[in-house]
Length: 176
Image (spheres, rainbow, N blue to C red):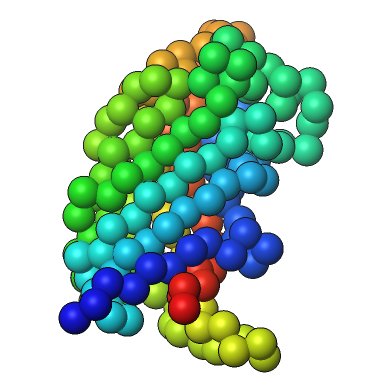
């Protein structure tokens, strides 16, 4: 069976992250500029290959000062490390979901991660493009990737949680 290449449709895709602030509220951010490809055998995504690249300087939490702090050397060091990336090592079907295992690189640190992708289905848009949709979820520990800045808060705890929740709505276009 021939390999089919799918390319991310950035207009209909989004990627978010969530972290606890002061351990009492959750702050949400978005990566506004990213790309991904998916290579699959037919229209079954089991054992497919996925690559992803995100632009750190497109990070947006809705607050310019916070965004600039996150892009600084305290966190992502966007000037020195302008991108983060993911490359799958395995994609296995688990019911209607897929378990993605691969290598995530942030700030020059590459670590294995596991993500879950819920398959939304395949549809054809009004212009004849075949599209596949996925809802992505996962968690990482930011300190594993050198994102270690923090400060203790009065009464115990820290300003920023180590756990980062990832979520995405990803739509791919089948290449002709």
